[in-house]
Length: 201
Image (cartoon, rainbow, N blue to C red):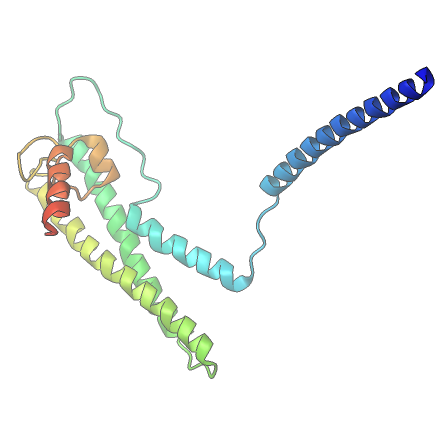
């Protein structure tokens, strides 16, 4: 009887140990799978990679100029002095140049890629791609107008001040959005008003 009990205990112990081992093995496998997923790049076909790069190009230019270093603020420095105005002028001119190059790229792309596909699905996908590009260019056209307005404000030494209350917009806010014409407080109030009334200011 004692022998049977000891055998049963040994079996239970072995099962428990095997369960713990399996759990540990599972944990190790999951960890390895995560590291493999992180290391291995996602395989994409030529069509999808082209679309990804196109989307990246569309969004990058609209967000702002790439590679512009932030302004190093000094203590007791006058707001919107010549140095700061020059910094923002460089940002706006760089951004303008990038947007203009995107316009040229779109024109060449649409001229080169335009083809009368016999397959209606291919035709539809091409039309969708072109319409997306044109919509982006239209948004950028409006943005170019704002950039020109901001450059004119720099010339008039009126840049960096809120149109509504006349307060300082702030260097960091202007670096994030160089075409900003309102301080954070006025912009927040305007957004709340827009939500309530549905009118865009």
